[in-house]
Amino acid sequence: MRRSATRRTVLTATAASAAAMTTAGTADASADGPASRPPATAQRPTRGLRALLREIDPDRIEATTRKLVSFGTRHTLSVQDDPARGIGAARDWLAAELRSYAADSGGRMTVELQSYVQEPAPRIPTATRITNVLATLRGSVTPERVYVVSGHYDSRVTDVMDAVSDAPGADDDASGVAVVLELARVLAKRRPASTIVFAAVAGEEQGLYGSAYLAQQLKAAGADVQGMFTNDIVGSSTADDGTRAPYTIRLFAEGVPSSETPEQAAIRRSVGGENDSATRQLARFVRDVADNDATGMRVRVIYRRDRYRRGGDHIPFLERGYPAARFTEPAEDFAHQHQDVRVDEHGKQYGDLPEFCDFDFTARVARVNAATLWTLAQAPGTPTGARIITTDLTNSTRLVWTRGTEPDLAGYELVWRETTAAEWTHVVPVGDVTTHEVDLSKDNVFFGVRAVNRAGLRSPVAFPAPQA
Image (cartoon, rainbow, N blue to C red; front, side, top):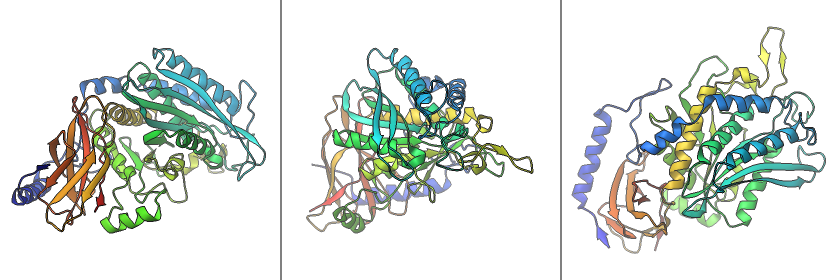
């Protein structure tokens, strides 16, 4: 067991760091909000990652968005056997597009239509085939570790049961699907260490049916999904009052886990872990690797599962115990989503049309996703078995964890922060060990553990549970 510096050293460093954070200059700010200091856990983008991000093309994102709009409606209950109109035409085009990317993958990417028949249910009046279009890029080192990124390709108008009227769905959610396709195109030519699933799901507007089926299939297969992101309504940087925030993306991340058991709730209450779910750690990781000059974006983490009275395709993953979060534009314009296409008596245009999208903005959102997914896939997995030993009453803290199996694993770092801080503020390298003692009281701060590989890439943080 390795022991850290003395408590006096730790407390002095803590005080000095806090003072520095209040007096030092801040990092470069975007035009959308106040400057913010990068977290202590931030990871600078590598040269290779910067090159990858430069390949993301706003023109391709625009072309995908407009192509999906061209199918007239993509309502889940719309026609499935017309080659030019309806959700079936969109499904077939998406599959063909992803197969063209897979052709450049050297056999690493496979494409499938994941279908099932949804029996009558809320917003599904008759038995309906629901099909997810999936492209799986198999990892070359740790393929059993999986990350999922999705957008939903179904659309709707004012009446959620209207499967006939034109429902362009440019922002909601051709934009999210365009992000997924662009990520698949760029990453298909690369060799991620872990597996990435690119998903265009259906049935979202009728009740998250496609994503629920995908999450359940992964759960039934015992898949080790260590992160899932849905991109839903990421096409515009302009709010309903005309204000713009072109360099900010919201990331919704729940605190108390949707899948929490009574036993887990009791532990959470005892240690005050409401802000330290696996999803909150995933959101912090996004800030660490994607809120920087390489993406050109500020990631605004929102501490709730989704917007008021709204939901998205990350929720079925949360309900099955997977860390999952939702990307959504900074401020929505509700005249351009879930609306019949029309012009009112004052000349105001309604409808989710592509002319209201900002494709450069969506490309930056894609870069945030790419920086996150690529780093997750190349870095070690989130540590498992993290515990704080509570056998004895003491003012020091001993942590233990299970060593990962990655062949390039270099070691571990402990992180900590004040209980009132939102971000990790301190990092201590501890080497290739599975236990470490810090001369600092576990009663006063929050601790975490993250893994580091030989390339210097860090995993998301694991929040330790108490162990007697």
